[in-house]
Each structure stands twice: as structure tokens, then as C-alpha cells.
Length: 141
Image (cartoon, rainbow, N blue to C red):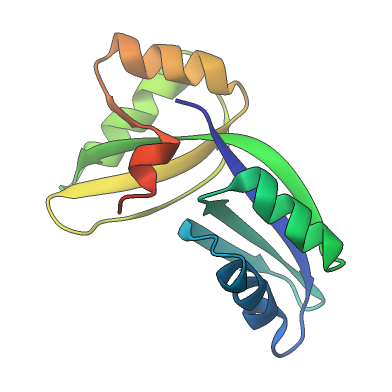
């Protein structure tokens, strides 16, 4: 249930984000989820590609700085308070969260988060019967 996420460091200049997605598209690598954070000088693009190893290799070959990290993904009802309930499970287990991002295509919200202990977070969510999303399932959305 642990998913490999790539973090790509980008100079904050026009067209740089496009280059990443153009390279991945030409390599037939799909991106199921992504998030962009920026400062005035650089940005960090976090993405979940259909082929993490291939995406990492091709981006490095094109001179992008890329790191791989472990994240988890889960589904929760798309309703007020649902995310709070899920995050309480982790808080009660003393699991910190570095960041999260998500989307809500309908009745469910899909959340990707980076906990400080991914395996423990998976175990806690399983114990509380949370719907964990595998990498292969995430690619279907």
C-alpha cells in the first residue's frame, strides 16, 4: 500500500513544468496525481507516475533533480469532517504528516499523504478499516 512518489525540483521559470510533462508523455508515462509548491526561485513538483523507476530515470537523464519518497493514499467520504476523522487516527498513533494533497471526483475524496512512518500509518489505517488505495488503483483515476 506504500506508493513511490517523485519530487522534482524545478527552477521557477516559464516552460519548466511543461518540460517535465512533455518528457513523461513522450515516454508514455502517465501521472495520476500531482502537487506543486513554489517559492520565488524554485518549485517542488510532487507526482505519482505510472512507472516511478522509468520516470525517475528519464527525468534524471534530462538533467532534472529527482528524489523518491514513500507516500500512502486513502479514500474518505467527500463530506465535512471526514478528513479530520482520518487524520485523528494518525494523530492518536503519534504519526506526523509532512504534507498531503488530494482530489474529490464525486462522493469520495482521495488523499495522498507523506507520513513520517509510512508503514505504521498503513497499519493504523488498516486497523481502523480505512480504504487504502494502492498505486495500481490510483492510476485508474
